[in-house]
Image (cartoon, rainbow, N blue to C red; front, side, top):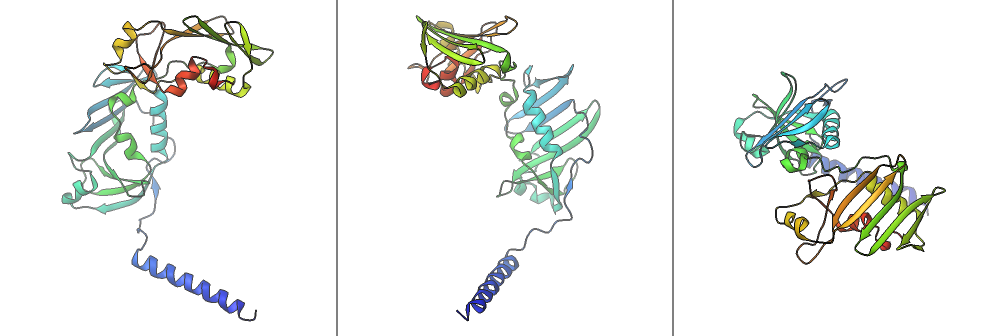
Length: 307
C-alpha cells in the first residue's frame, strides 16, 4: 500500500493538532517551580493542633515519647496514623506559591477564618508550621493552603485536606494488640458449648472443633493469626451498643497463647437483632470496640473463614 506512510503521517499530524488546540484552550497551570514544604529532615514535632467551625479544637501532644489526644478529651492517640500524616506532610510539595492574594477569595478556596481548618505543628514553644487548610482541587491531588497571617492562597500537592476532616474520635488509638505473629502458638475460641482451636505443630496449623480435627487452608489460618497479633478496632462502640456488652450472655472468648506462656483473651459479642455489628474488648480492658463482621468471624475461628 503505497500511500500508507502518508496516511500515518496525516494521522500523527491530526493528533498533534488536536493536542495543540486542547492545550491552547486549556493551558496547564503555570507554577513558579514546585518545591518541598520541608527540605532535609522532618523536624521533631511534639504538638499538633486542628481547629475548625465544624469540629472544634483537636489537640495531639507527645508525652514521654507517646502521642495523646488531649483536646477535646484525654485518650491515647493512634501513633501510626500520626506518623503517616507527618510522613505525608514531609513529602508534600508547594506547586503554586501564589494562586490568589485577594482576601475576598478566601472562602472560595475554603481557607477563610471560618471556612478553613487551622492547622499548627510545634516543637516546644517553636511553631514549625501554621496554616489554614482549605478544600482539595477537583482531581483530589492538591489542597489550597493559606499561611497564618497571610492573604496569599497557595496550592500544595498532596492529600493534606484528608487529615483536616477527621474528628477527634478518628485520632484515638484503636489498637488492641501489637504482637509478633510468629510468637503465637495456639488460638482457642469458646462459644457456649463449642470450642474451636488452632494449634501450631511442626510449623503447621491444625484445627479442631470440640476435639474433632477438620482440614483448613494454611494461608487462611496464618491470616487469622496475623489478624489477632495486630488487632485493630474499626470504631468505638456507641452509647446505644455499650449496654449490650453489659447484659448479653453468653460471651464468646478468644484466647491466644504466645511462646513464653502468656495468654491474651478477647471478649466478643456477635451481631444480634439489636445490632448488626461485632463488639469486642480485651478481658482486662474497659474500652469496647466495633469490628466488621468478616473480622469478627475470623476472630471467633469461624470455619467458613478457615477451610
